[in-house]
Image 1 (cartoon, rainbow, N blue to C red):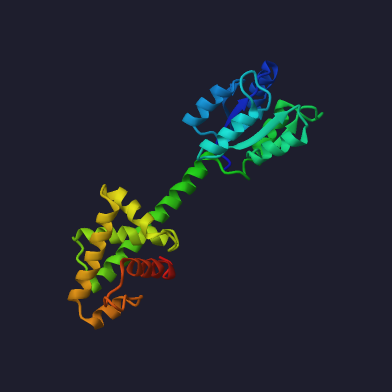
Image 2: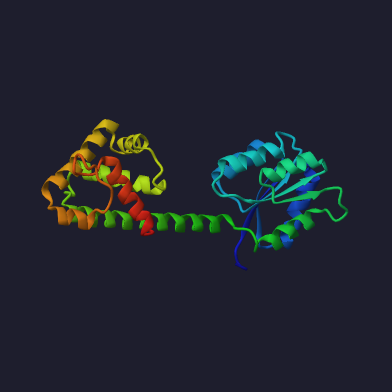
Length: 264
């Protein structure tokens, strides 16, 4: 990480302090000052377009204010920068508010030690403790890859179970029930059938009743064709004793729980 560069945005409306940050930045080769501005709108436009690793934020600005900018960071950005707030305002109420909005550290300009060099040195020394934008991207990519691998593994397992039950892979209801089960498993088996049907219907651009009907037909086909011992081998869930086959809900919940129990 020693060779890594960190993009730093400075939002400060005092031109003398702006100049001091520019001059002192030469002492910190790992820090790249990508923007120095006193306007909240300019800072927001930049950071939405291009992620930065750290923000040095003055609370009082010539346009806008630091608190509103912090709220935007927390509300709208996927990648969260390390944020140092600089201020002359020592109000406990304001300080609590900006900490709640995600400020990592507050520096008071009234402190004798305060200077542009001191602030930049703090960012430089803190870099090994916070996640850069690139590190956050890589963490997101890893999570997404892991989720995709998990989803594929779950689908393969469902295909194995369905093949054993004689449920045809090319039947429309098979595609519906796979997605309904996967969504149900992701929700810990706590979603309502109405919600599951509606969500799946949106995926396939159809309606919930069509999803429900095709899933029911899919299950009925399997239970009308396969011998009881085969059904029992691949389905150990609840049945509707009157009909001699599981309801849609029983079937879906059984396999959703099975996926989660198998930690798939």
